[in-house]
Length: 122
Image 1: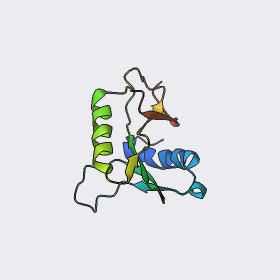
Image 2: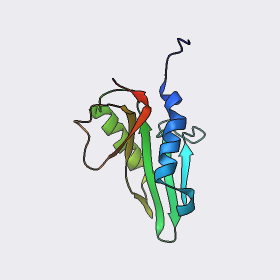
Image 3: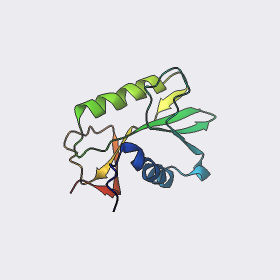
């Protein structure tokens, strides 16, 4: 039995799989995992993106290993959405990823939530 502490990065493969099931490659969706090669290290854990002739659709995704949706998480995701938007770039959705059983009382209507059953708050 391992005593390894679970981190948010341990959730990434499960989050990626959940995102891929909702945003299939066959429909043109790309999933970009956190990439710190750019100017800023303040980027979402994932960005789901689809390029069409009408523009670019983006969905910032933030993974949290916590059992309560917090205002700080919502504010962080809104900042990411603002920085990812632009001319011909539409933020289609914003998604927070949490362990199963997370308290979502604070979740705003303009954000989606994905629960990962492999991680639990109970």
